[in-house]
Amino acid sequence: MISFFKVEKVVVSDEKIKKAMVLLLERAKLLVEQSGTASLAAIISRQLSSKDKEVAAILSGGNIELDKLIYILKEEVA
Image (tube, rainbow, N blue to C red):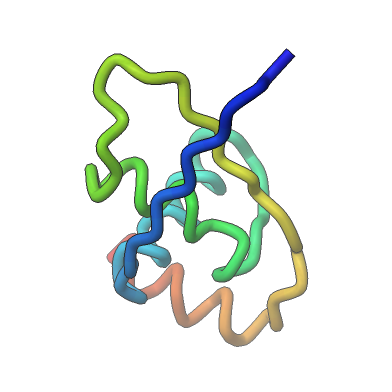
């Protein structure tokens, strides 16, 4: 049972969020909207002090317009 939560807040750039979206699409075959990838973006950009800790990232939402997704993919994959 989890008896203690430590909440840490960080600011993640749009570029890091886009990279996390593409990572999820390429590796996990998951489509997650921008706000839903913020936690993963913070983890993979090493903005959280997660060394030697168990960390959970909540991935949520698939509400993204097709033209916005295409734009992000063209930016990040090219």
